[in-house]
Image (tube, rainbow, N blue to C red; front, side, top):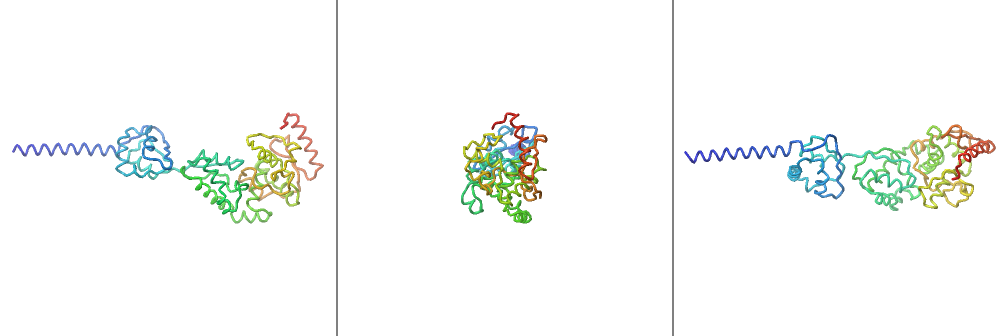
Length: 346
């Protein structure tokens, strides 16, 4: 009888211990284990080890030991996923592990207004894991450029400014390839037919659009400005575009941060393929990342008889257009008087 009581006591103690252990396990898995009031983002770099993840989670997790136990039991510790993950208030360890396994949150990546591939690389590096060195190397890779009929001079045309969803851990090569697919998607058969109809290919459209973009910030004026350049181009004139001279000056000095507000007569003699006052052809590639409105302005340029334009000092941001040189010179004298009055010498 005494032995039976001992065995019963042991059984009861065992059940109590099992209940306590089960409760601990349940709490470890299903009890809330985050200590913040709004969503947080955790970044896990490519090639990161488990300790890196632990360090990243440390500020947000209340009981790291219980998380560690669940992560190891679920095999996460030996199967780390790189990416950008959302951690929400009130998450338990099971949810945390699942989020780190399958919850890679896309980045809404944006870019525009870039002057060079180097500038684009810097902009993208601010938004994804790949650094600017890896990105510029991918952008200028000769094999990729040759395979896709680009050169280093015109490769900027491949990057259509917009907003794209990409994963944070996208590599430089993956980003470049994605942009090539977006370029092909943008240049529909209809757009290519329009380009062919006006005597240009897509890269040449982007090059001319980059000049139009730099000439006017007014989207509604861009088709009219594009019409001036198409009139010059179709009639075999030099484009005589000030923004190309500014680009040529920066390219020669490699001082890309220089602000040039006034083009001087001596600048027009600069020996550069980007100087459209000296050479009749289009520049070797875009002098700026033309936005979609500028590209569309070239494809759908305004059909008119204007060959000249100059900044309108009475309607800032817009321009005065002229059909002949005499009219243009009158408009130009008005602009020169204004710019001299402002004391703008360069």
